[in-house]
Image (cartoon, rainbow, N blue to C red; front, top):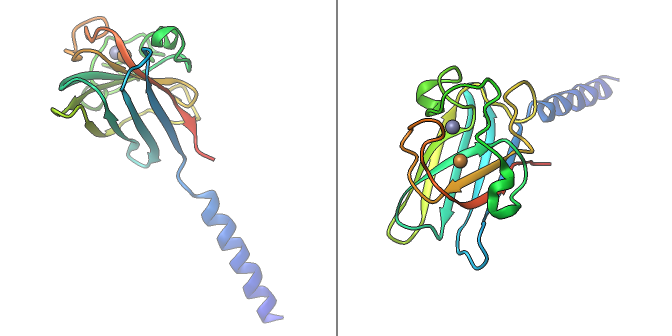
Amino acid sequence: MKRIFVLFALILALAGSSAGLAATATAVISGTQPGSSVGGKVTFMETSEGLHVRANVSGASAGKHGFHIHEVGSCADSGKAAGGHFNPDKMDHGFLPKDGIVHAHAGDLGNITADAGGSGELDLMIPSVTLADGPYAIAGRSVILHEKEDDFGQPVGNAGGRIGCGIITLDE
Ligand code: CU
Ligand code: ZN
């Protein structure tokens, strides 16, 4: 009898720990132009301090490239179908980790700096944004890598064309 109880407690503990697993999502970046060498991957993990975003890109020109979450989960029409920066509260453009959700678009991730070989990485903790729940949920939206640097000017940072795009998909 005691053994059955221990087994039952173990099953409950396992069920509880799987329910507590952090939600994660992935976006695979592809070039928006035919024959483009741009590629990359972005992973998102919900934590108690915010959303942990890690990205690596390759095939870009050396230097800074604006990097944002855009509103629509589509990379069609050379990335234009992704729409504008994700901005549910109609705020000014900024840098979310520094400016916070009331002084930046919810999609403002700043820049990724590519090295001479065209590769770059980003590791950011962004406040307020979630994957699936609430007004700042980003699953099903897109990430866009831009041609030029985001200089944080208004209205969208002057980052120019869209060279890479990926759709943010919840991991199973
Ligand atoms: Cu953008
Ligand atoms: Zn913006």
